[in-house]
Amino acid sequence: MTNSLKDKELIEIAEKSLSKYKLCDHCLGRLFAKISKGVTNKERGNQLRKHLKQYETVEVDNCWLCSGLIGEIQHFADLISESLEEYEFETFLIGTKIDDDILDKEQELLDFTGSEYAESIKTELKRGIGKILEEKLGKEVNFEKPIIMAVIDTSFDVVNLQIKSLFIYGRYNKYRRDIPQTRWFCRICRGKGCRKCDYTGKMYETSVEELVAKKTLEKTGGSDESFHGCGREDIDALMLGNGRPFVLEIKDPKVRNLNLSQLERKINIHGKGKIKVTNLRFSDRDEIARIKAADFRKTYRVVLIGEKVINKEKLKKVAQALQDKTISQFTPSRVARRRANMIREKKIHNCNIELIDGTMATLTIEAESGTYIKELISGDDGRTRPSISEMIGVPCKVAELDVIEIKGE
Ligand SMILES: [Zn+2]
Ligand SMILES: [Zn+2]
Image 1 (cartoon, rainbow, N blue to C red):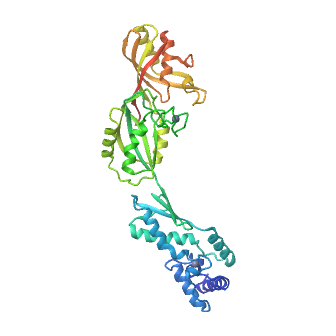
Image 2: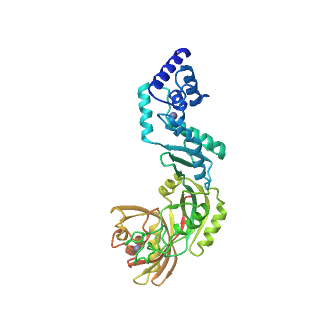
Image 3: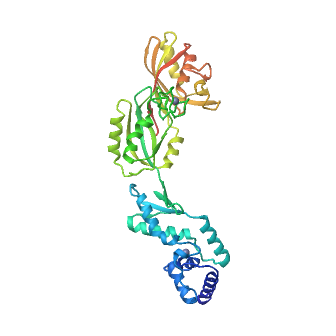
């Protein structure tokens, strides 16, 4: 299309629009926004109006389409800038929520003119606000992965911030037998607080999650958190050795540039005698899926007690026989309510005896991820086969169970 033909088309559309609607220069020019860059909608609207001569300037407040909305860009930018004051971020994106009434009128005008070059008033608002904020704050608009998305609701003059979570990877050790990995809400009141839970809303006083998150929430000013572990040990099992990988997600963080070694020290002072964290580093959401899916071998230390004195030679033979043996475990009775009933085949890589003393023995067992160790010892009334109880001919129970190493990272 030659320039003159296109110009003719523009003038026709502008004429048609102005003959029916009172439009400000922004709203007139916006019908042709996609034609070329370097000219603002307001400038193009103004040029066309001058060219047509017979149409008077319309102030934005009197505009049929935007009723003054387009004159509020600076105001919206100020409002957003104020709401962002407490937050650390490098990139952002602006979103808008505007009156359906205005969007309906916009559609009506588009249908009436048939212009193929128009952009939405939302686009002009977002661009205008973004530009002001980029300059004022020295931050960048990012369309793919902004740290903060600020959505201005123009009808109510409120800003809604959507802030990317902050993810911190680490490994934890647990030194107590009465602490679950994650917050565990009271079964009766489901967290509200009742007599049964002494109005704490919780089944246990604290958890690895709470002990790790408290200082992190304080430092970041986050609104909430979520703890993602690479599997979990039983509440009464210690987590020793190199620790268990986890990712802590902090929601709506105000501070993102943390000194992680300082945070590590703070967490460890707060958690002293209960938990410890190591290897803290920044992470992302993808890592949660990675550690959740990981099948890391684990090494356990088990103290077992038999109903009768345990024969040394027999137990030695059993330990040897378990090397690289595959066992089958039907869903244990203690977790049957939470897990599907099925048979799981698990490989025992190693079994070593540390100590045998009368009815008591201490073993280290290295097993495939997801092996039920308590049931490997007890047999769980025949649900796990073979079991150590079955193999030595003495019914045994686990007295203590600790994770001493998680391999593979
Ligand atoms: Zn307007
Ligand atoms: Zn309760």
